[in-house]
Each structure stands twice: as C-alpha cells, then as structure tokens.
Amino acid sequence: MRNGTPLDRWDAATAAYLSSRRALGRAYRKEEWILGRLRAYLACRGATDLDQALFDQWRRRFRHSSASTRVVYEITVYNFCRYRRRSDPRCFLPDRLGLARPRPHPLPTLIERDQVARLLAYVSTPRPTSHNTARPEVLRLAIVLLYTAGLRRGEVARLTLGDVDAGAGVLRIHESKFHKSRWVPLSRSATQELREFLAARRAIDADLGPAAPLLCSKDGRPYSGPGLSQSLKSVMVRSGIWAGSGRCPRVQDFRHSFAVAALLRWYEADSDVQSNLPKLALYMGHVSIVSTAYYLRLMPVVVAQAGERFARACGALVDGGAP
Image (cartoon, rainbow, N blue to C red; front, side, top):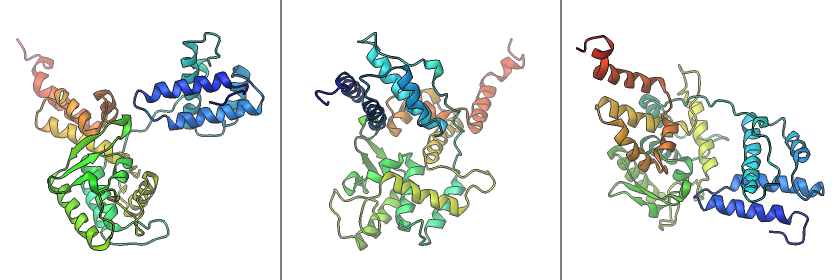
C-alpha cells in the first residue's frame, strides 16, 4: 500500500480484496494487474477514487479490444467495487447491465484416438523449423500426458523429475489451480511412454536431480506453459489433424477430450455416471463437480449416449408399454 497518496483508500481496499480472494485458493494475478492499470489511470487523472465518468473514460481506452478482454476487464472492476460496497455504501458500483456481454464459447473440438495417433507419428520424426524447436520426444510425452491424464498445460510444463514415479506410473502435481495438489496415476501405455522418455533423457541430459524439469528444451531450460502450448499448436496445425472437421483443436481440447472420454466409457459400461463424477473431479484436480461439469457440456456424442441409456431404461414407458 502507498502511504500519503490521494489513493490511500483505494490501495487499502485493493490489498484487502486480493487477500480475501487468495484466501479462497485463487492466484488473482490477472485481477491484480487489471486493478493496477486502473489505479495508474486514476493517478494520472489526479483522482482520489473511481466514479461513473472515470469508469466510462477508462473503458473507452480498450474499446477496440476483443469482447472477451473487455468482459474480463469490466467484470474485474465490478467485482472489486461490489466487494467495497459491503463495507462502504458510498463506493461507486458500475451498473451490471451496462457492462460488456460475453460471447458464447464454442464447443470444444474433441480429439479422437486416430488423431492422437497421427500427432504421435508426426512428432516422432524431427522436423526442425523456425517455429518449433522443441525436441520430438518432449512433444510426444506432452501429448500423451495431456490426452491420457487430462493434465492442464501448466501442470505438464511444471513437472520435475522428483514429481515422477515411473515404477508405479504416478505423477505428483504440486499446488496447481486452487492450490490443490494431487497424485495422478497413469495408464499402462502412458507409463511405458514415460519410462521410454526417461531412458532417452538420461542418455543425453546431465541434470538428473529431482528439481530438474521433466520436459526441457535442447539447452536444458524448462518449458513455460505458453511456450509448450505454442509448440503443440504448431504440431497440430502442421499435422493436419483437423482435416474433415474444419477446425483445428486447441491445446485445452485435450483436457475436454479426456473428460468426455471418461464419461463415454461409463455410459458404455452402464456405470452410475453421477456417482463417478466426484472421482473424475478428484482426478482432474477440481474443487467440486461444478468445475468438472464445464468440461461435460452438451456435446452431441454425450447426448447420444445419454439418450440411448434413457431409451433402454424408460423406453417402454415412453412407448406406452408400461401397464
């Protein structure tokens, strides 16, 4: 907090707000950055607090940004002002109906097994380009972990050798989203891929300490989440796995595909889907099944399976066959 400035009250409220949100398990780094930009604007205008005129002027500064960016900026300020209103009724609160509206998110593009096979075949052959300097074995393992374990992009990038138990086929995920840590057991095929990767890594890398990154670049540096994502996007575009669908999958679609595949397996095995959802939430590192439900929206393939189950269980009632 900055002492002796016209924005002392603003700074105190910002610090309290961020502290309260982070106590719930969220990092709130983006929100801190946005509120910092707004504070800098208020300071430049010589203001002591936010009002409707200043808020409207600040909004116009990014009117040419994408709809999603405008929504994030404005909702961040709205939530902060609403927090302040609880202790200070005089605090300015933007009109919720006047804020930018989010656009519907497109349904994820599910990645099928044959597409994964094509990706793995593509990365197994080195193709050095100016856009992709990642080692083929790194990309191969990243694809396997994203598809078979449903890990987040950042979780894959942050793995260290100490997080890996190749003998048991288990990964340790430290302090991920919502500050949750968890153990992630791997499938047999993914465990074999992991063992082969580690054998190749031991043959070429000197740093084998537990703190060494599992996935590292050619010069031994760890990948960042965005850096790994950029390499994977390049591979997906160049491999042509979108042929026939018209849309190239996104990196986050691996996680969607993992969740939907688990749901389909339960439907096909005639398992109790509702009782299994908490297990999926635990495996994926969610706080509750509410977060998991985001990955299980009304995908056509899921709707078809649910419809078939309903027909088997209640078809006679619908057709008038019940007494």
